[in-house]
Length: 268
Image 1: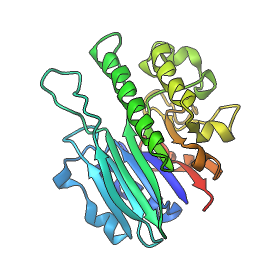
Image 2 (image 1 turned 180 degrees about the vertical axis):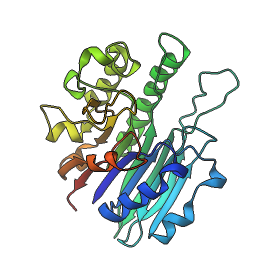
Image 3 (image 1 turned 90 degrees about the vertical axis):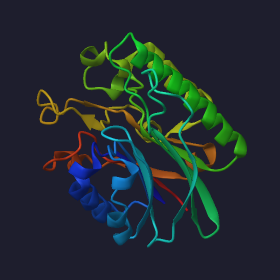
């Protein structure tokens, strides 16, 4: 079972690249972030025509998450929860579209899949960084509830956290960014301390794996990247972990997202 996460940075602008990736790699489950589309504009029919069942949680112009399940391979989706019940940092803004949870089933076996787009937190200090940390604590509480239910689960997405120094091309370049602040790292570390397995780190203990390259300053051409797209697994799924990877080549294509798809294969 191949599960993947992909911050596509705008589904309208990246739909050709997204469809290419789905055709070429055919994940069983794909979690998408930064869909940047209202619910009514989400291109569900495009994915259904490819043999994927989609569910989505959209928002105009920014944020937005979606989950796709490969129906041709026998998988089905049932939504469990959307949103964590935490309003955005602006007064009266309401909740942002950052969280989507579903059960993925095949042959009587069910896996809980959670797709997240964690707040960036910049600039800091300020309300956006406070919101980031509060959101991470809300996420931790929900992950604890999932853990207590004893359902095999994976939480995939753009966490906007660089967990370790060897997850970035140069520590000094990002040391003042919200992605690398001690509070951000500590909140992520608490998830791991609760028992969740960082799939990519587990199979790449020395780090040096990037999932994001900025559009600015020739970051892609110079390989100035870092790892912020993560796949966290419950112990049952961690025991089934076979391999992980980043489809880096897709970052270099024309009009690509600034993220590359990140995936894990779980033994059946």
